[in-house]
Image (cartoon, rainbow, N blue to C red):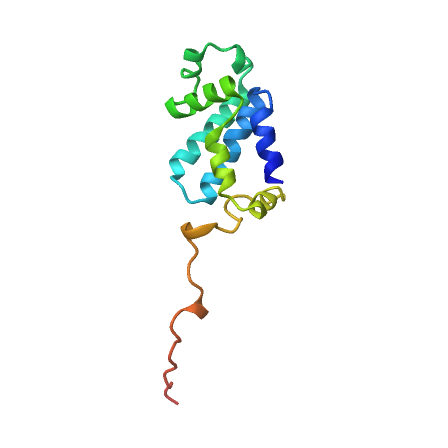
Length: 142
């Protein structure tokens, strides 16, 4: 399944919706991997703003892309890269380090980055009560 996703990302003509979907998926994957939440939010915001555009990004001069609301330096470079090459290496990198099961779970309605199990060492789950030291009982006065 992962190979099909990479194939679509690499060889799909990049219109506004494909670029927005790529940014949205990247934001979710960054969130799952515990990366900087502000960076993930910037890609999610860029996806939202790109979906609202009425002019195709392919027809937008490259320097004007950086002036679009919600598009900063990093996201603007990523947009230009996708338009010029048809590929998004940063997303491909995140897809390659994400277990396929996580991607499948993200397709289930109601399951998103917050509910998907954490991957790898960046797990931020709290230890359960059973994994902590056993509690000692104290005798209560009768």
